[in-house]
Image (cartoon, rainbow, N blue to C red; front, side, top):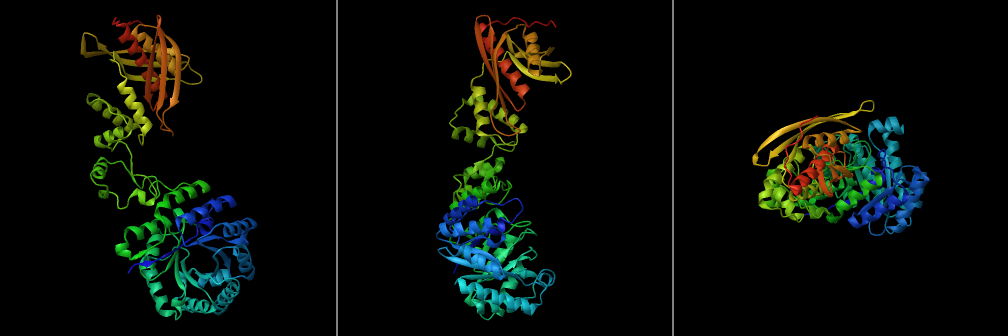
Amino acid sequence: MPRRIAILDTTLRDGEQAPGFSMNLDEKLEVARQLSRLGVDVIEAGYPVTSPGDFASVKEIARVVRGPVIASLARAVEKDIDAAWEAVRGAERPRLHVVLATSPIHMEHRLHMGPDAVLELAAASVRRARSYCPDVEFSAEDATRSDPEFLARVLQAVIVAGATVVNVPDTVGYSVPEEYAELFRRLRAGVPDIDKATLSAHCHDDLGLAVANTLAAIGAGAQQVELTLNGLGERAGNAALEEVVMALATRSDALHAYTAVDTTQIYASSKLVQAVTGVRAQPNKAIVGDNAFAHESGGHQAGLQANKATYEIMTPESVGLPTSRMVLGKHSGRAAFEERLDFLGFHPRPDTMPELFAGFKDLADKKKAVSDRDLEALVLGVSAKVPETYRLDRFVINSGSTIAATSTVRLSSRDAGNPERASLLERVSLGDGPIDASFKAIDKIVGRHPTLEDFSLNAVTEGKDAQGEARVRIQFGAKRYNGRGLSTDVVEASIRAYVAAINVMVMETEDAREPDCGS
């Protein structure tokens, strides 16, 4: 029968200890409220003795947040325990969490104590904490590098002293899954009163094994696991809450355990922590990364359109996302492209679809991902087309702060009598800048010199690879003509917009004079 696993979230304590991840009181309180909505069993609110700010944060969380147990961390030092209790005593369900190292390297080089003294201090510290609070957790720091027999003696002593939870941390991320699982099995067999306390696991990710070790501990009898959102924590971080919880939810058949976490709150919780710390999760981060439910490959997109289970082992809705994200890029197929256009409400004529798809592929070669706004600009550009008497073939710019701008532009010119025939015409011109020089070169090619009335340039999308949208309005005679151009290169966008305006002018005036080939 599946076992319920308690979740202790230590984002506000262990997670915040990571360099650059500190939060102020208001931010901690906001995260704590979200953790309550998420449904974690225990919120480790902080380490009160470290600073007045941390003390105040733990005290306010204890006062305000209801539902989860609120835990307050202390070393096995009387002043730490006293401060931890003063901070957390106002909680609806307080817990004191006492930590003391048990490995030989820590006992010798940090504590400067022998094993018997450590065992005595562990028990005495738990008794002091228990005098304040009925719920006391004891953590044997660096448990995975401790002597298993000595570790078992310490855990038995603290349970007798009143510990209700005993934690077996892989503090430096040294263990591997089967080894960690075997330690739990050994402790369950070797600690006489182990059934009187909740057995907990706390794993760090120095070898990238924190989640695997946590799941191994669950399989070996752990009843509580200690996690952080986005895997935050010292050095390489802690076991990620979202990964452990979704592993249990997705593979309950294999893991035979579950949690009370509301998984639909996972994404919101992750995004909140990213916002308050200012540190984004990497795009390929499991469950909450930007690419976790994003698909670009044409084959994958086709499979998802047929049945989402082909490439998604969990639904995006299950973690709080509204839907999967079809990323349109150079690997995307036409089916995904057409589906996205349909979703955006665009229904282009079938005869324009090949040109649209070709334009999309061309853009995808220039950008990492094509956004909805990119598609909108592309569709509007094609649907509003007029006959292309002139089309940009290439351009070369020479410009700098100490030289005059020079532009060489080559256009293909359609033969009005034979649309299948086109000739290439190239001219060079100086100008006040690369765009001005390009417009003057185009004027030479087409043999007309309209007045530029208006010119604007805007970013269609965000980021360094955003498309630039250029709009021009020219006047020739008594009439005005508009043109629009798109490119990730602003000069190219401007040239395309100017050529588009020229084409409108040619179409409306029905003037097909041979271009001026003079310089």
